Length: 216
Image: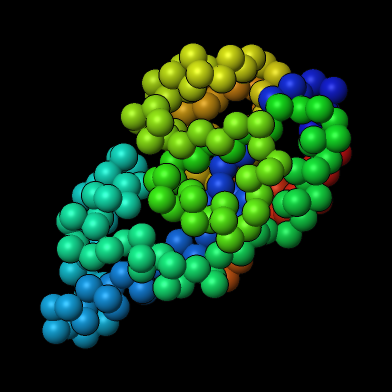
């Protein structure tokens, strides 16, 4: 699936790609509504119903990914709530083997995530994956999410990659499409970002089931 002789830089998404998206889905669809409902005297279901439209209004924007935005918006300490369910944070199978293999091949390995710095810090602390990366870049450093058409140009000003020799692995189809439009030549989706759910539709992209599929 990948000719590693043609790859110099590897860009890896975090949530749903390296890490099981079950944590994030549980957090936003169950735990936050539960805590919100407790404060407002609602049932868990009513709390979820109240939050869904608010999530949808900012989906795909920097606010959606911002811990501080949601703390202000919902009057909840989102960072603390994440710590309450941090035991759900899990690394996908064979990720560490894959990352070590990339290091052994002297590829440049960069974590490129939309995650807010507070979420990123928690997950790196829990998983200890930070040691494998040459750089860790959050969209919050750049000011626009990875879905945005200008993201990759701004990233290139920071990272100096060559699109034709770069591989991006990401579970988000809008992100993969924005990268494709920019000219990143090697793109892979992920079939099961959340291991508790069935395979997702990856549409026009090749995809992996786990990182054994492309282990150098």
